[in-house]
Every structure is written in structure tokens, then in C-alpha cells.
Figure (cartoon, rainbow, N blue to C red):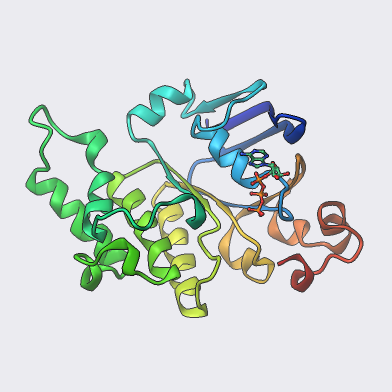
Length: 244
Ligand SMILES: Nc1ncnc2c1ncn2[C@@H]1O[C@H](COP(=O)(O)OP(=O)(O)OP(=O)(O)O)[C@@H](O)[C@H]1O
């Protein structure tokens, strides 16, 4: 069973068609890279799956059922692009990661010891333990990305949607995050991750989706990276360097 199934999805913002008849599926335990030029519809796709963008037509199914149910149960975690987050909000790292547990709280609506343990583990896994009490506004770009990955880990989500987690992060953090996502997939989690870093694509993902308002191709990273395929999404001058 596909963890995420998207069929015939069309999203328009007024006169702008952001997504047109987008169809694809994600299998459990895989990392899939979402690749496309600026404005190709990557963020809109994440928002549509999360119910944050109004769809004109098409269907989204999560874990074989309606997306509302899976979202309510906390089965899907979403890390938006940094620009979409209010970093002045007065919360610390640990508070944000705790939010991942909210969908699983018992009748008292309070975090139990087991919830705090999950939070601690998520902080440790993402290397954020020492920063747990820091305000989110006082974090570097790479640390901010890791906060959302940590929240998704604490949430024990089946599906993680990560919108450009590698933007503005250094090489070391990129390697750490890549290894983390590979580990998650090995334990049965499913990851959809948008990225402009084509050099890292093969190390990161099992499959990639080439998006240009429509799905141009869903295939192995090797296949997607063929110049003739990249040219279909980025234009004739496409190369890993020029695509970023
Ligand atoms: N709120 C909005 N109102 C109007 N148009 C929008 C809105 N959000 C996105 N768009 C347009 O929809 C198209 C797809 O945008 P989207 O942000 O999904 O692309 P993207 O692939 O995520 O881009 P980037 O790589 O630059 O983040 C673009 O033409 C964009 O200008």
C-alpha cells in the first residue's frame, strides 16, 4: 500500500496554475526527492497534501484513507520552508519538539514521562540537546531545519514532508540530515523532501520526482539526473550547478 497517493491534483492561485494533474505515489520506507526549478510547485504540493492549499481537483490519500484522518492522528509531519515560519514566536527548541506529541496526549492533555522521553530522544538524534532551551529565533539556519525534523521524529509520524531542509545548511549538517533521513526510511518511515541540491540526490533518495507544474518523471535519482530529463524541467542549460 502506498503511504501517500496523489491523483490528478490541480491547484491554482487566481490565474497562476501551480500544479496541474499531478499524480504519484510513495511507498513505505523510502526517501523521495522532489526536484524542480523555483516556482515549479514544490511548496504548493506539500501544502496541498497538508490541506493548506485549496485544490481545484484531484485526490490525496494518506495511509490508504482520507488525509484529514491521517493528519488528525499525527501520522504526517510537515516542515515548511523557513520563510513560512514566524521565528520571533517566543518558544524554545524543546517546546517546538514537544508539539510533535500533542496529537498523542492522553485524556489529561499533559505530556507524560514517555512523551518527554520521546522528545529527549528526538533532540539527541538531531543533535539539538544542548540547544533545547534556546529560543527558536536565536538558531542558525541549519539548526532551525533540524528543529522541525526533531518535531517529526517526536511525533513518530509515518510520513515526513520536508520543504527544502538543506537550503542554507553547511556540508556537515547536510550529511547529518541525509544520514538521519536514510535511517528513518530504514525503520519504515516515508520521507518526501524537496531539494535544489542535485549533487546530493543519489545519496539522499531512493526515488526522485521531477516537477514542473506537472510530474515530468518519477524514477531513480540516476534516471532523473540524466541531462535530457533535467532539461525537461530546468530548460536546455540545466546542470546540477545551474539548477540550484
Ligand atoms: N500564495 C500565492 N499566491 C499566488 N501565487 C502563488 C502563491 N504561492 C505560490 N504561488 C505561485 O505558484 C507557483 C508555484 O509556487 P511554489 O511556491 O509552490 O513553487 P516552488 O517550487 O516551491 O518554488 P521555490 O523552489 O522557489 O520554493 C509559482 O508561480 C508561485 O509564484
